[in-house]
Image 1 (cartoon, rainbow, N blue to C red):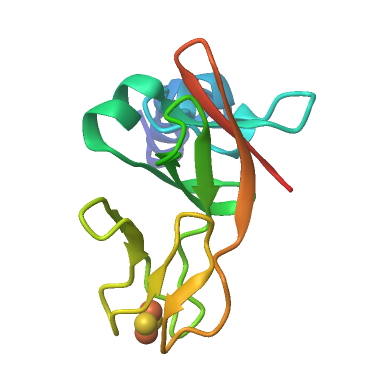
Image 2: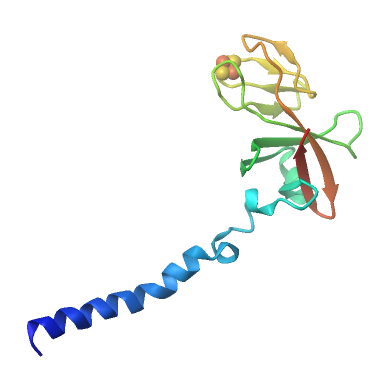
Length: 148
Ligand code: FES
């Protein structure tokens, strides 16, 4: 085998051996992680899967940072547990992510302690704009949201 034949053989081998990995990476059904729904999970009525009811009830809140609308944080409505509240948890003061604090009955920003009511309205600054709300619903074991 001469040098040219060797290089040609190695080149063909590299292409053939990398083909399955390349095809897998290009197939969205294989590449998606089903435990973290992404923007590809949007249905025809505009609702997107945030996560499962099981995870919502286990953690008291459900966060998904990979949806087409952006970050979404879902909690159960304090006055009606059958209803959901969904907000974009991004604080408008400096962009930190709020978390639901059941003891305070508020979304609290860890950076400068802004507080927001469950409907997203500012209760305490320095943030001066409410959290963005989404329409939320439960279908089966899935929590879904849609931009209002
Ligand atoms: S980033 Fe939220 S209060 Fe400053």
